[in-house]
Length: 425
Image (tube, rainbow, N blue to C red; front, side, top):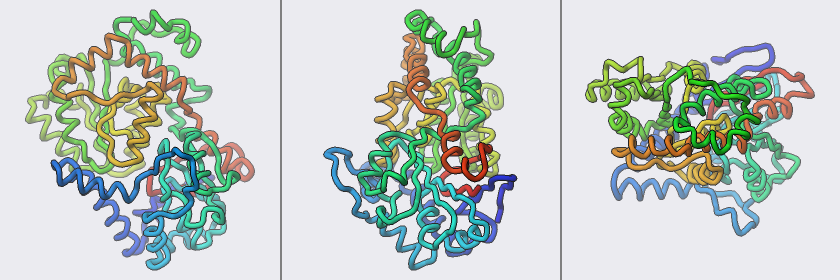
């Protein structure tokens, strides 16, 4: 089953576990392949934008106001349940897990819905991974469903109620961030943010205005950061924005060559993206900086990638990406530069980031060095880091552990995987 065992939990990648039926794997691959194709095709003028707009209608989130009954199932929900009912999608996985029916935590809706449909005997939890949520995440008949929802924001709680989910099935948890980046009493998050602020406020403008608040939250800042100003650019699962990463690298080439700046390029588990980055770095005559001031982060599997990514974030000053579930990471005190959203959910995430004051849309990449360093000198990036840290909720993992496990396992450590995965305890 390709499980990662522990005394109290194990992780299953629902789309790639050992023994997965061929038909189940094909359904996952067809969905992934189409999403990655349409995400890349979006960049094609006129045709791409039109095609993506049609696709996005399939997964869009309805306007929140006026508040109204949104419990009627949409096309995406019906399509998911059609695959479950007519193709037996994920039945094999559910039957296997049912042999030891621990509480089941899913970070994508289809495994949770399949578990309920095929009568999984244990508790079922669905962890929402965005600041708002589409109707597709809720069962066909929400008032009769026994799926429990782990909601990261108050808006998700309200939205689920509009979808017809009973209030006793909704648990407001906050953001499920990696425990190793938070620490007991926020100790690790505070330490990393203290060093980050030194780099993000080189002129001292923000510190001069809000020194008392900084001291209250973080204590005394170090005189100097142990790392150069560091940007981490994450391209996202579809790899649709890899060209943006290269254009940014080109715009910052002089500072990278002089060691004034470090750039982490996150390729994830996409080996072809890592190869593309290497090719472009050579073309830009920056090969000598590879492994020094330019670091490509990639791995062969998700577990290895998560470890590497979390390690990189310890010394990251600016997170640069599309507004995916990475938006939550502003709660660690990471200012967020936002690339163009891909899809309805990411539009809502961007609105949340900008409303919080923790993120802003990127400017023209050719002028990136100018506007980026203006943001630094003005103290805006330092302010954005503090806004995310103060206003964001970073204890979701702890709250989820309590909600799911306190009555059965005590306060034990858990590990969560990415979308298309479930965690059994």
